[in-house]
Image (cartoon, rainbow, N blue to C red):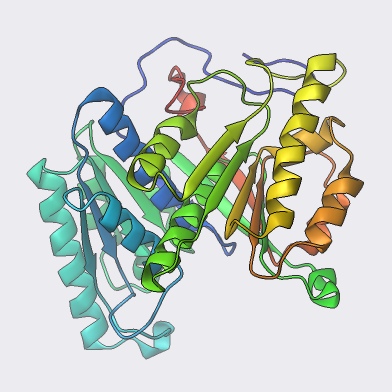
Length: 377
């Protein structure tokens, strides 16, 4: 359905949404591996909800031992929370290198990782296989693109595969069901204000809220490694009712870490169109903001996720000045993650130390696949 003005486009023909898709997250912006982990958490949550066990393989290329990566803590939180569902394999050396510096060891490590991937894909034992950083592996020529594409093209319909990293080859993009590119934006004013720990994920592509959930996992995992309790608040706007993409993921997170994760949502169970705002929309938006503002100021939370706050401000349901003020005064060790698309970027974007705009290059809805609530939106 397409509607003039601000809105969303969904499937045009009614056909069943296949459970397993090939997702590709690439681009120079942050959030690619986080989005993959968010999808993993969502899949585990859906498995718990339906009573079907979800097993996950995290295959991490170019991330050998001896170096710490951002998603290490998030993966530790996943493995602690779901110890029998998560397998992890790391390959490669623990340093960056370019095409001119490729060695025989790099090729052998890439092949070792791919052999594991092929076995996992063929085995039928896994519901989700994450091929983290396989895109640069292919770009560097460490693996034959045609073999990888052929294997993924012939995967079972039930298997979900997520490929991440910069510079995905065109042949892989051609067979992908979903392709989101994350572009990085830099804001010098964030440095000038001395602000750290504000991340923004916006744009039309899929992966914004799932990236935020990856950050929630990361905060919990860091607390585990430091023997501390890192609490997380997930505050959602424009998402009244139930049955959204993140519901299963958040439920799984709260089941494993009930004392660390708080979740609040506000809004009507309906799309809010520009020019058709109702009084209840303003009341609910303000109610959510009062909770979020107090949580940020309190210092009780290590991470505060403000999901869909950007479109709430864009629809003029909240004044951006109050948000700007709260972010400028937040405790230094509190991370704030803001998500959601918007046509008119608010001033608080200038405070972001990380800002990724997610571009939608391909989505399975465009192929006439009916979107399922709780899986796709």
